[in-house]
Image 1: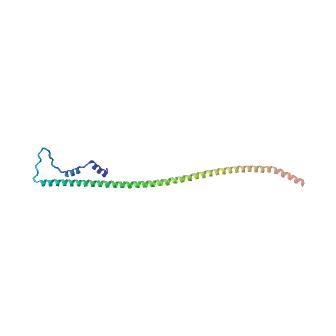
Image 2: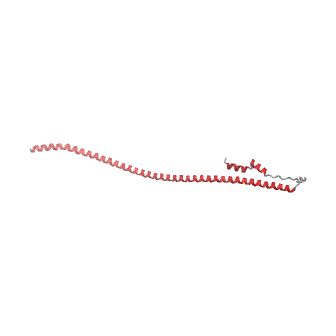
Image 3: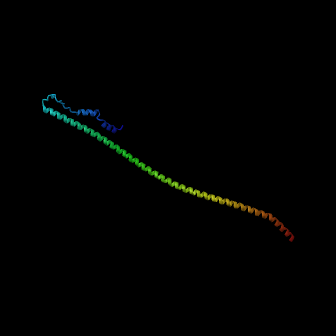
Length: 182
C-alpha cells in the first residue's frame, strides 16, 4: 500500500500509540470537587499552587501546539506527496495523449495512402480491362485475317489448278497449230 494512503488512513483512524503517549504527556489534571464534601486542604502557599497550575497550563498549551505543528507538518508532507503524484500522473497523461495524437496522425496518413493505392488499383483494373478488350479485338482481327488469307490461298490454289489443267491443252493445241503451219 502506498505510504501516502497509509498516512491518510492513520489520520482518519485516529491517534496511534505514539501520539496517545504524547497526548497523555500533555494532559493536565485538575482537582475535582464534589459539592457537599469538604474541599481538600489548601496548599500552604496559594501563590506557589497558582504558579504550578499556570506552569502546567503553559506546558499543556505548548504540548498541544507541538502536536498541532506535528500534524500540520504531516498534512503538508501528505499534500506535497499527493501533489507530486498528481504532477507525475498529469505528465504521464500528457505523454499518452501526445502518443495518441501521433498514432492518430499515422493512421490518417495510412488511410490516405490506402485510398491513393485503391484509386491506382481502380485505374490499373480499368487499363487492364481496356487492354483485354484491345487484345480480344486484335485476336478477332487476326483470326479474320487468317481466314481471309486461307480463303485467298484456296482461291489461288484453284486458279493455279485451273491454269495447270487448261494450259496443257492450250500448249497441245498450240503445238498442233504450229505443226500444221509448218
